[in-house]
Image (cartoon, rainbow, N blue to C red; front, side, top):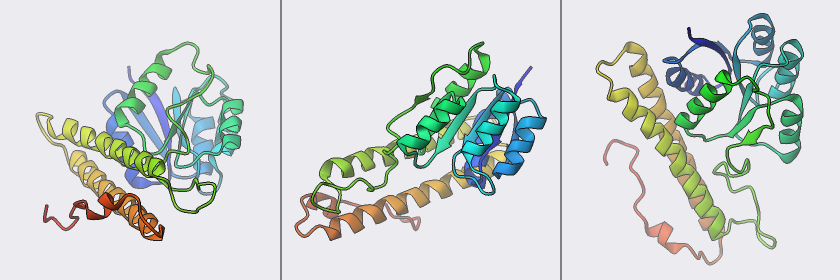
Length: 233
C-alpha cells in the first residue's frame, strides 16, 4: 500500500514536477499556502510532509510547528530557496528531518522521501543536502567589493548545472517510458519552462556581475557561447 505524502508548496510548476516524481511510489495530497498546509497536516494523517519555507498566509516555520504539535512523529522535509543559519536552527529545533535548499536533485528528494517514510526513527538530527547559501545567487560579497569572486561565480555555475541536470534526468526518465500520459506532457512543459527561466536568470546574474567589475578577470565568460532560448540551438 502506498504511503501518503503532503506537499505544501506555493509554486504550481514545482508542485507539479515533485508530484510527478513521487506519484509512482506515494499518494500525494497538496496545499499551496501555509493555512491549508496546517489544516491538511493536522486533519489528515500523512506519513511524510514536504514543506516549502516561504509560503503565503503562514510560513514554513509556523506550519511545521503546528503539524509537529499534532503529530510529533511525522517526518518533515523542508524545501527552501534561501535559508539563514537562524532559520535552519529553528527548523531543526522544531523537528525537520531533512532540509533541501533549492535547486535540488529530484532523484535525491525521492530517495530521501523513501528513506524517511520507511524508517521507525524519522526525526533524527536534520541534515542539509548542501550549503544553504549556495543557491545560485551572488549574495555573498567580497571583503572590499560588491561583485562576486571567481570562486563564487564558479559555485553559482555548478549550482545552475546541478539544477539543470536534475531536470534533464527527470525529462529523460519520463520520455523513456513505454507510453506518455496526459500528465506527463504537462510536467514536461512545466519542467522545460522552469529550465528556461533558470537559464535566463543565471546568465542575467553572470552578465550583470561581470559588467559591474571594472576590470573583469573572467573575460572568457563574456566571449563564451550562450544558449539560445528562441529555438535556434
